[in-house]
Image (cartoon, rainbow, N blue to C red; front, side):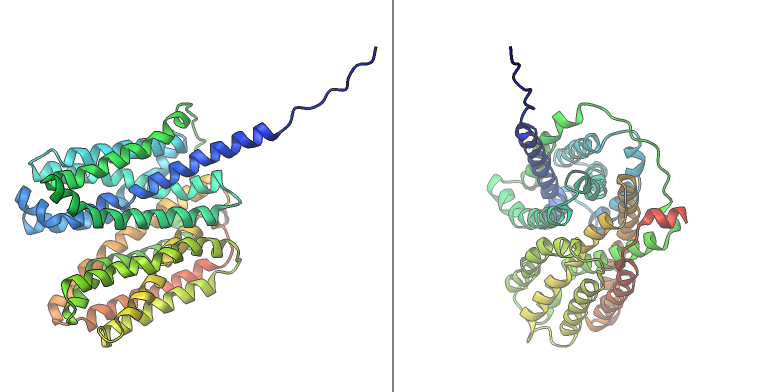
Length: 403
């Protein structure tokens, strides 16, 4: 009797299962990205209504506008400690649950203190997700990290724009600012769903003690992230007013501000992919920073005549944000290294970023014009150049820690 040879089972079902699994992870990442700025821009759009509804003082209203950056700095630094006890998916699930609870709590209170606390709670969820996503992308898409980073950055920007545009109409349609803010809590709850099944098996991570703050690479990344975030926050906070003072109508000034996001979307998609294909990132750093500096000089001396050109250059310059996210993933060998570098760069960077709108506003109040405040932004962009050049060469944060 002849035995039939044993034929190995085809590998295709395994490949298909991995593809489906990665598809769920990608969908989860994009849903998280949709939430990373919606809670902020939605509140910004409805801030006058919230201020009137809760009878907030000018000081409290001002604190609300700086709370995101401060929360990102404080809570982002705590993320590496979480990774020592929980898996990435567990942490991401928790961050979306916390975000949903925080957003829900702030729309059912009449207390300004509870509103502040619940907003800070929501921001803590965003802060943790901010830090964790670069490591999660590298972990699940090691050969497509640039593309996936570009896609989720573009999704983040789209979510930010959607919340800014839709919050006021939703509030008017449903008769309350609470509805205009509360709807984004539902989006956060939806973003938690893809992670529930993946987060059930608990895995404790090995302890890591990477002291990124003792490395030149860590500080270079922090300064680069901080300088580009400072420019971004200041641009979003003051650009519309600059155009209004240049004789544009409020509606047209708002459209020009939206144009920065429009021009920035394709850059956000392409920049991480371009970065992943290059060993030396100095040309990208120089190109983006040059676009930003030219835009600021144009706004200072000819804001009306060349408005569309300055908006386009600002949109290109904002590509420094996805480039920074991509570099975080490229400048560490391990998951622990990425999380530690991401936490340090973002927590330190957002402290720097929080100064942007404040300093620009103070300089404008002191001078009554925009040339000096914009000069401050040019100086920040120059810092961005030198910091970016320092981290543009291929090296790894673990080498700096060990050496």
